Amino acid sequence: MKRASRLLAGVYFVLMAVAVTFPGVRPFNTIRPFVLGLPFAFAWPTLWVLGAILVCYAVERTHRS
Amino acid sequence: MTDWRIVAAIVGLYLIGNLIVGIVPGRRASATVAGYVAGDRGFGVILMYFVMGASVFSAFAFLGGPGWAYSRGGAAFYILTYGVLGMAPYMALGVWASRVGRKHGYVTQGAMLAHRFENRWVAVLAGAVSIVASVPYIALQMRGAGIVVAQVTNGHVPEWLGAAAAYAVVLTYVWHSGVQGVGWTNVFQGVFMIVIAWALGLYVPYKLYGGIGEMFAQLEAARPELLTAPGLGPDGTPWSPFAYSSAILVSALGLMMWPHLFMKAFAAKSEATIRRTITLYPTFQVFLVPLFIVGFAGVLHTTQPPNPDAVMPHIILSTGLPPVVVGLFCAGALAAGMSTGDALVHGVGSMTVEDVYRPLSGRALNDLTRRTLIRWTAVAAGVVGYVMALHSGRSLVGLLLMAYGAIVQLAPGVYLGFLWRRATGAGVVAGLMVGVTVTGVLVAQPGWRPWGVHEGLVGLAANLTALVVVSFFTRPPQEQHVKHWIATSRGAS
Picture (cartoon, rainbow over the protein chains, first blue to last red):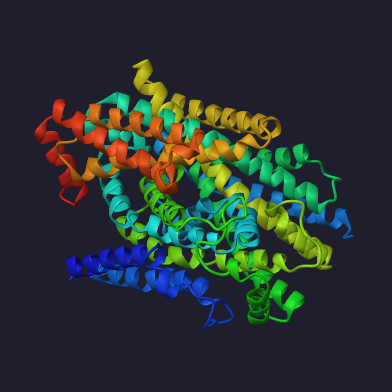
């Protein structure tokens, strides 16, 4: 479990690095649709930042037991 | 014009509050170096969360972040992503460092590396690089504090006085309470920063445009180039995607190498504390979102600030907010600058004594003497930073760029120390020197960078190559020692 959760976190952060830099960010780098009033290109990195909370929480939980 | 006396009174009250919060916890710390520098290794999640968050975000983020959104648009998104990407490796590195730190009693990064590589020159060089990089950073925080106070009081409190007042408070609590003072004031300052950023980010677009969506719809019609990555470069022409992407990668790799952040692994109570801190950290990071929104609000505003970094105070002062709110904003900006500056002066004091002076002098110093030396060096760092802030003009930002490039060069030594048994102290020293030189040359000659790639990334490649090559040609530390050290970091006792 511990190993799997750490692997998941590692994969998430590598995916995040790809998704927020060029060329990976290109398909998501648009103004519309707005998300909560923010242009999509602005909301996109914000969502990855927030997603990190869930992933790290999963790691933290498996380590607690 | 808002009444500057009310603004100044609120800032004064805020500074007094800081002083109290900073001095009280120092009474509980032990009178040892471990107490003064690493808080007796007793920091829980709340302290760690605010120390990390408030130390990462400086006056540069609080004023410069909106400035980037205002003048360079989507280029600012890079600041949003690298913080989380940079914190992620600490989930492993921070935990490893905390384990070896507890076992062997390190309080600084340099001491850790020197022991791992059985080479005191690693500590001396890493310490020297960190110290030289930290001082312009301190100066920039002080100048930020001075400028904001001068602006919101309409020049009645001059820059030199605002900076001096804020840092007199910082040096007093750092002197008295060490890292405990840094920790508890950062909780106070962090709450201030977050609350004020969100309040302004939601209020300003509502007041000026009728809502956040409204504002971006107007921007979409007028300046669509600002709303996507990579936004604009410093000269106002489109920024290169290479530059944008490599800036994220370099900042992500280098973030935790800043000694004032890395050292906090030695202050954490347990490994779980570090993991929980990193889990919660993105909640702090998203406070950049409202700050960027304020910056974007400045683009179509009726009047323009004198320079991009002044967009935040400009908007605050020109939207007719009551003086109490202006005062609170000013306190928030000071909080951002002070919470980074305090960790930096404390870090410089600790490194100068523990990483540079101790190994070079070769004298056995008792705990109390070392603590006294660290205190005086921290004060000296504050004074040097202050003089630099007042006298170095615009060159300061250039110095900071070079400083960041240099700090990133600590990464290969730290990472490979934990990951590659064959790495040698001579390799780390060589890599660091090559990396710092290459980065420095490219900062001075930006035209030499391939495809506009960030100079730090080129420096890292050179650094890593030198580290690996020299390591193969030099004798590694005793195998048993390295094996044992790495096993400790992975949790074997």
